[in-house]
Length: 142
Length: 138
Image (cartoon, rainbow over the protein chains, first blue to last red):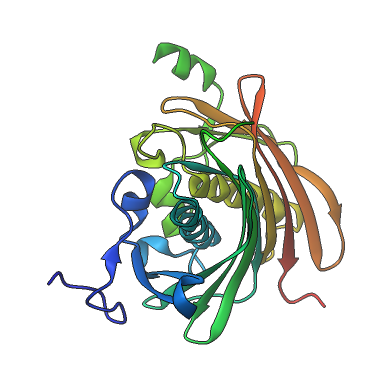
């Protein structure tokens, strides 16, 4: 069993296998909730994720939100590729060093070419960020 | 590569304070406060498996550059992001330069409205509208 940061379950799988996700990660996938209706991911806030005020940088929170939602768009559509078209993020509360930040992604609607998603980032039960966005399924007709 | 350096001539490195910004940086800037233009070179760290810049990196770049402009707009008071709306119009590829000149839409006593069109050459690749809170102001 691979070592996980404090607060990340031992059985969590690595969700950041390459590219920018791997560079800012590790990011993990957690077990679904509500019979698969809620997809969950997590990361532990480390030194490189912080801003000068000692809270987690907004860019890192938005990156984690985008990765969680993009992965969900592929999981629920079965598509090899999807692309973020639009994303709105509200910065509700700050996170600090060592916090385990969890994403909970819900599908609002899926059409043949488009996926609508919403996502909350939480630390415990405290909401840090809420996001909603639109993903295009690659390869589907324009 | 020489074309890239030529394109960045006149730019200077932006002084980055946040550890995360130094982790993904550098960022370059040209021009005076409130009319400043920023440039960012897409390298191996910033792309996904297809060699296209990660959406999270674009939003981080938006947060960095709009944040610099917000800070300038309130004479370097403490500001935090309240909201960021992003449109992903095209990709930017490894080695390309992404440029933006943040636009101050409105500043009230406590809120700053900023937007930006992020360009590769003459094409808009990403667009954002953001809201910032000036801390300590009701």
